[in-house]
Image 1 (cartoon, rainbow, N blue to C red):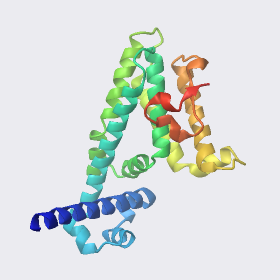
Image 2 (image 1 turned 60 degrees about the vertical axis):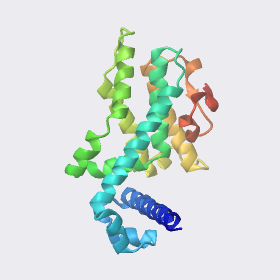
Image 3 (image 1 turned 120 degrees about the horizontal axis):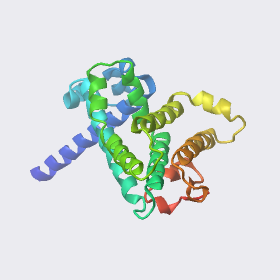
Length: 237
């Protein structure tokens, strides 16, 4: 009986920690790290201030745990996307599919982009930590770019490709009112505007990497574009 109670107590503690992290992620993304306090996390989570301190100690420690969780989640997703791309297609199509599907992921899951935007202006230990540990995506892109460049007379710069992905991801996360202004009259802004924004990047990457129109991707909504596997919902234009 005591062992069962101990296991239940551990499970309850883990659920409490996850609730705190989820609420803190929402608040950091919405208001920025500097504007969030342990008390505001406590109020939204419905968990006592002292219990939050018991689990994490400080707001900074909460941020580090969130950063680690997001990095692990993104790394795993990047691997899944890469592994789901057919191995028998040309490398330009592999790089194209990976790039446009990773952008789709950032358009649907905006918290990583918003958190990165928040630390850009700080350039403190959190800034260094966030970017020094965000290597998996860059490594995958670099490997694909190197493979692509070895097969073409029109090489591309990996830093430029990374920058283009960052530009389109951050624009959608931080400039949402301009998305609506760019395509006025759309009935469902949360879907149609992001889809149109992604389509611009899709055309850019397809042209940059010389992907024929028959092999370009499209979907009914942006969420489909980062689904695993690639062949489940995507189809050629």
